[in-house]
Structure formats: structure tokens, C-alpha cells
Image (cartoon, rainbow, N blue to C red; front, side):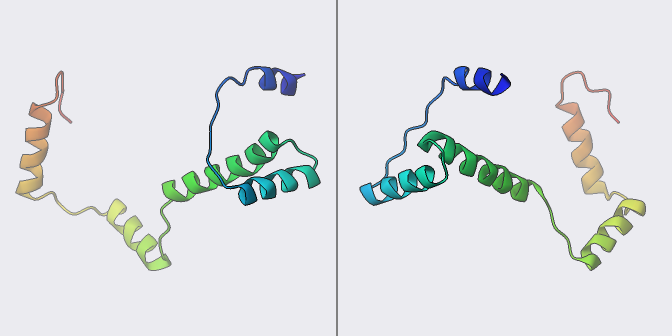
Length: 100
């Protein structure tokens, strides 16, 4: 039932330009997998989109970099005067700022 509701709630479209060979290939792949062209494209494009976004949002560190990162979090350096000045200036320009 829920699947039917999601099908009926789809109202947006994406148009793509492709040549006949590309279209035929996609249609054949959809047909042999038992999907409509739309469901085939969604089934394959959505996981790929999620993977691209996840990869973009993930920072991977080497073991040495990871250890250095943790060390800096646990024992941060004292802020120098330039950083302190930049923070003061930033806070002065934020409406309704109570500071740190």
C-alpha cells in the first residue's frame, strides 16, 4: 500500500538528453531486469547519488593524521592574538551575539 501511495505522489520530472544507442541500452537493461525505464533509472541512480554525497561528506584520514587530529582536539594550541582579534571582530558583527 505504501509503495502505491509513493507512486501516486510523484509529481516532479527530470528530462535528459541522450542518443538512440544510450536510450536503447537503458531500455534493454530495464526490460531484462523486469523494471520500467523510470524504476530502473531510479533504482540505479538514487544509490549512486547517495554514495557520491556520502563520499563528499566524509573525511578520511591516515592513522597518523587521525592521531594528530585527536591530539590537537585534546590539547589545543593557545589562540594567538590575530585569532582572538578575528573572533572579537566577528562577534561584534553578529546581531544579538552574547559572545562565547
